[in-house]
Image 1 (cartoon, one colour):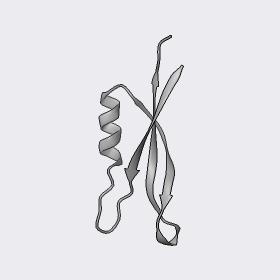
Image 2 (cartoon, rainbow, N blue to C red):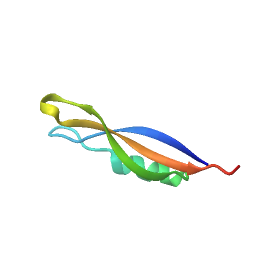
Image 3 (cartoon, rainbow, N blue to C red):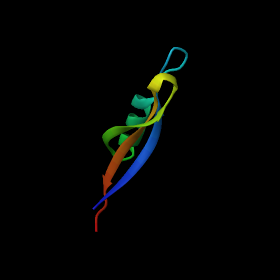
Length: 61
């Protein structure tokens, strides 16, 4: 069985940087495996402003 975790990641823009690489590195060191990203919110003109990064970990029964 797998346990899933969702972590919000901001999308970089003109005045901000993306933080997805740091988040993926952090959780992989804790034993989580990065599965994918889901767009989570939209800004003006429909641009994506954040993603939910999806991680999974195998739970031993």
